[in-house]
Amino acid sequence: MKRFVDLIAECLPKIKEVMPWDIDQLRQEDPNLLILDIREPYEYETARIDNSLNVPRGILETACEYGYEETIPELVKARERPVLVICRSGNRSALAAYVMQQLGYRNVASLKTGLRGWNDYELPLIKADGQPLDMDDADEYFTPKVKPEQMPPKY
Image 1 (cartoon, rainbow, N blue to C red):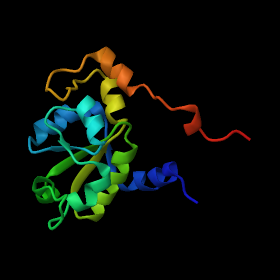
Image 2 (cartoon, helix red, strand yellow; image 1 turned 120 degrees about the horizontal axis):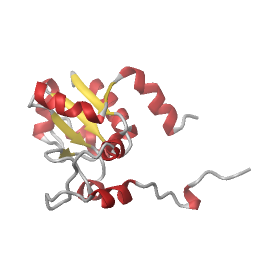
Image 3 (cartoon, rainbow, N blue to C red; image 1 turned 90 degrees about the vertical axis):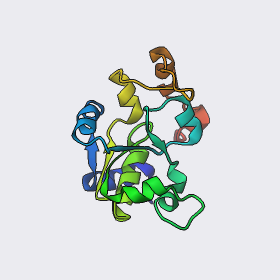
């Protein structure tokens, strides 16, 4: 049986990853860069990169295709655009980047370290109202909050 970390490890050699500090250069090289945030809407509302597009991972495949209720035309048309997929830690985005390549996206990458790393480098995040997110609030948001019952059993 494979675990989540095994799936991530399998797809990492097959995708491109970029570091948070590389995004400004990517934007300068191609202002058409689409930043695709695949976190859940409640995560996106709490903290996000300005001008990113939110498409939750759970509907990504149908959002990438015409003919579904979840279809997002901007995303369907982005197969030739550079797309940077982001999530909280860089794990879900790695899987999403791999899937998007399978769906024909030619220039897709995942943000290594995710928004946690973005925040660690003190790069700007905004709240739902478009206002800057305070660094202390961002640190609190990105601090893991795993409950005891979510941890593996001890033998």
